[in-house]
Length: 78
Image (tube, rainbow, N blue to C red; front, side, top):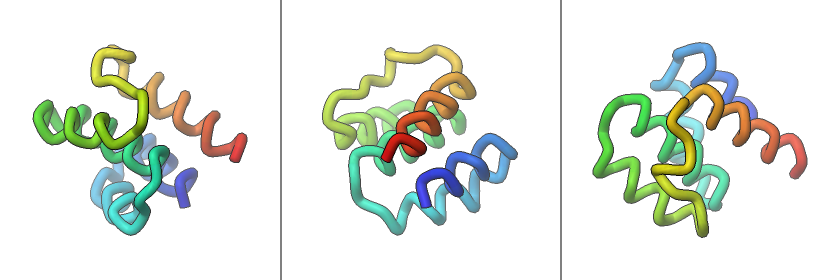
């Protein structure tokens, strides 16, 4: 599910990506959710989701695509 959400986000299908991560409640899903809100420019909501990731921070990445690729690497390791 995580990789499907990230693939959708990378394909600019944020609605689909959002729908997938909203069904999940784990730190990786929260990270993906945070990235989606960062892409949308919703900093407040993005920071909320980062707080639920257990260690990720809004400031960790300046490039959302690079961050999605890092999340994809993590998803593939699970």
